[in-house]
Each structure stands twice: as structure tokens, then as C-alpha cells.
Image 1 (cartoon, rainbow, N blue to C red):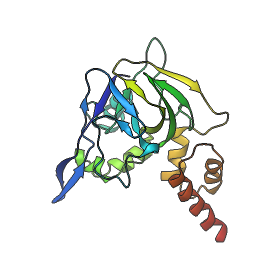
Image 2 (cartoon, helix red, strand yellow; image 1 turned 45 degrees about the horizontal axis):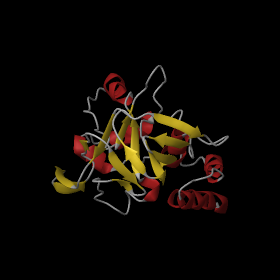
Image 3 (cartoon, rainbow, N blue to C red; image 1 turned 180 degrees about the horizontal axis):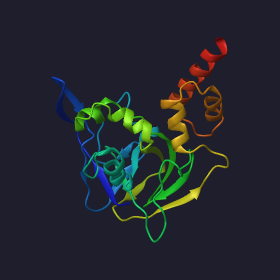
Length: 219
């Protein structure tokens, strides 16, 4: 883990309106406790759409940052994507990202055990924070979204802790595939059916996909 971050609720201006967000997070020095609902000291401005057991922690691949500059011409500071944990490669091992991480994977994260629950679906607050109106669309197009984990066993985490893959469900879709079907290829009904068969899919996401499949079958 290259960095661990927490943040409180702050405000910024966007198109003449005040936006509440807890996305601007500060790096933590030393261990911090990770519980079922997230890191001690971390907050959510919108508890309806953020936080909760299935979104306890947001992780982001650190190698996306130079890619944003090289491919999209956008220079972002560390932690710009509101992540709690920025990941990096170590000892010759590649950094996990949306193309390799699968739904339902179980990891040892420092002293905690977590399970990959779903991709991050960015909202307008990310675009408003950086003044890039089409940033949500760019995230969806590139697939550089980040992903959430749920906490199976609480524990302390800190910068420099190793991430260990403990279990990977056979045939599970990658985080990138889930993000594509949910946010981009919304007419991929067969893809939605595949996701519904995946173990560990959050109830809210499952209900969205069930509604999509039901609507298609009713046509």
C-alpha cells in the first residue's frame, strides 16, 4: 500500500453551487484501524450513495496516475480519486487493477481481511472537485475507476503494508468487466445475467441488474 488516507466533509464550489464531499483525504502516518464501515476518521457526505459495509474502503491503482497524464493530458495529485488506499507494485509483482482484480476476491490488507465487492461508479463530485466536466465519462471510458471492498475481519492498516491474495472465486468477473456492464454497456443483457450469477454481488447492484434484465425480457 503506497498510501492510506482519511477525510472529513468539506465544501467546494461548482457551477455556482456548494458541493459537500468527503473526497479530499489526508494521508495517515502510522497504523489506522479498519472496521466494518471503514477507516477510523473517515467520513461520507452522502451516506445514501457512499459508505456502508459494501463500500467500506475505496482502493485505486497508483499506476493510473501517470496514465491519466500520458493518455488524457490530466495531471492529478496523489489521492485525487478520493481513494482510501493507493496501491503499487512491489518486489517485481504488478500492481493490481481493474483488469486483474475479480469480484469476490479475498485479500489480507495489513492486519485486516477484506473482500472485493464492486467497482467504484464515480459521481459528479469527482468532476466538480477537479473542474473537469467530463471526468465521469473519462473514468468510465478508460476503466480506471477503482474498486470497493467489504471488511470480513477488522484490523489495523498502514502505508507500506503488503496486500496478499487469499482466495479468488473460479470464473468470477473482473472489476473492469462489472464496471463496463453496469456503467457503459447497459444493453448487455447477457452480461448482466452473468453478473447476477457471481457470488458476493451487493444487493443494491443486484437489484439494478435484475431490473435491467426484467425490462429487457418484458420487451
